[in-house]
Image (cartoon, rainbow over all chains, first blue to last red; front, side):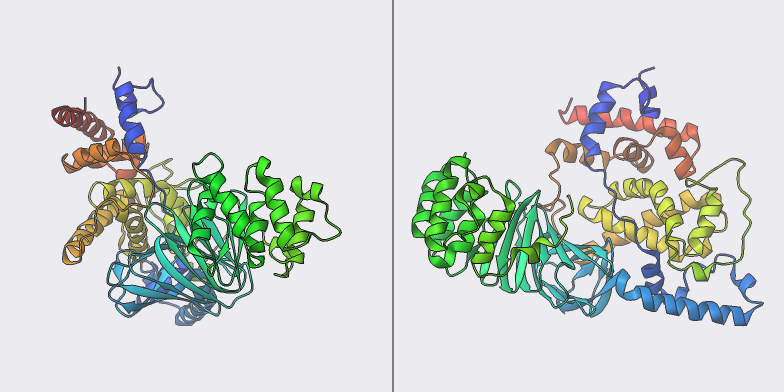
Length: 341
Length: 194
């Protein structure tokens, strides 16, 4: 019977039902499992679910109950900071999940913080720093472990001021992962998944599917679902330079790439050596030599590095050349582990 | 194994359970609920894995898609903190389904009091127009058909699985699926989707 498939998905497929499955199956979603410890902390008066026909069992031993309460309190203390962050409303009525935050509240792993056109919020991350969430934004807390704090910025703008050791604070966007290297920065994501990272202090690494950008203070990098993190450029670069670089980032097959690259190579200043270094592996192989020559003209290649090695994209050679730019050693940021998306 | 609040483990409880029934993987539903009540995060994850699809489907049939994930978590939070009110572990599926329906109702009431956001917020996973058109029609179906169809067509649950999770009889689920599908086809046909 054809309709058996409606009851039993392992039966012979019914093409009509399959069509509905394909269409509606796109709506399937599995939000992260909430953390129990945080739920108990959110409802301290309920003392968890232990009222479940257990109170009378616990009653005979007040001493034991007191000990349990003490241990619960201790557990709360040790898990509180790891399991959730404090949220403060800066303006309007931001929401954590479906709960409106009027003054302060908390966000647990898996929950989202949403601001509308009239609300802003601040996330206080213990001793790590603070993140301001601007209007019309949506962020999800993905991890709050002692060794990693991770947010997803689904849309909108956040400002992060991080004082924790490098690589502990990470923000995912639809087209990149921003890893803090000890810094302050602003990250914006548009509704189409494109975005812009602007660093005001320290460094941020921007990574997506193996493509990396190291963005220093005073510089910015775009991000795009098509090509991931864009080439970083200093904000003092003129608008034309930045526009042409955007065209180069879109790739050799895009109209405007060749003219954009020519403009960038001609007009790059000594200050833009950082940008040219990033371009070496990004341009078409036929254009790589021109980029290497342009960089060499602004920041001489170290004696230990050969042109052939750079043309082969030898990692050690590229890192040595980076070190010679005077922007800090490449080994420093190479220490972090890129997590496959 | 993570025991977030293992220190709060209550005395062993005995529930009358149907012979051979396992709610979540690795033990009877009563055992799993008992472990959850004691703060066992792993048991809670098993419970979540077994029932979150049902809760997701119920919510998807009632509230805007963008709010469903958050509400799924809210429902499980409420269930956890109110677990003491559950008298019969076998009724857990129907009980958490009722919590989900109540949360959806409360959410819609609150949403009407606040600034309305468009149902579809760009920037998330792109959902094709056909999907949203079908979902719109599903929303017009009677509740019993709507929820059962979403569990089957969105969450990929089998008829027997739906019956096990919701506490409905197999016969009721089968009827809901077939009548719901018939009605869905008729309504889509009337809107020119066939």
